[in-house]
Image 1 (cartoon, rainbow, N blue to C red):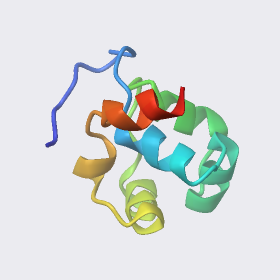
Image 2: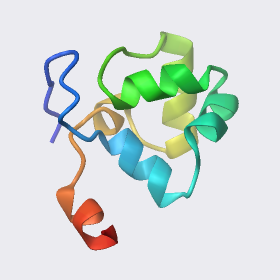
Image 3: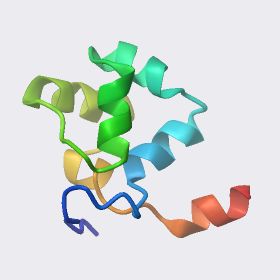
Amino acid sequence: MYRKEEKGDTNVTLRLTQERLKRNWTQQEVAEMVGTTKQAVCNWEKNRSFPRRQVLNNLENLFGLSYKQLFAVADDIFFSSTN
């Protein structure tokens, strides 16, 4: 479920990160595919900022998920199984 975290709460892992890693994509690759910078992707993943509407649309199309799904807290099962 979608759970809004406080802006700047970097102790959460967003599903965006989970989905990117599942595809073995770097932040730079995602940035190039959606028309932004690596720093912007890093800031989204650290919950420091939120993408502009057009970039958000590009992210939704790229991952096949809604923004609510992409910016929800990730499933811990994925991360615990990869460590």
